[in-house]
Image (tube, helix red, strand yellow):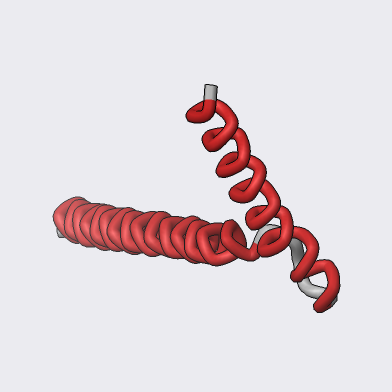
Length: 90
């Protein structure tokens, strides 16, 4: 029975400490609540931004590669059509 009472007191102390450090103190200072979670949220936001930048860079690289292929095909066609016109004219 004493262990249950001790455990209950410890639980209330921990709950009171959590409320004091994560809700009351930040509210009194005028900052956002739950500062323990803000750092993680900032890091997760940075991670999302970096992943988006990575995806954008990959897509830009693919676009440039495709553009070079198209230009190569166009230049090959122009060489082939000009070559076939020369042979017809001769």
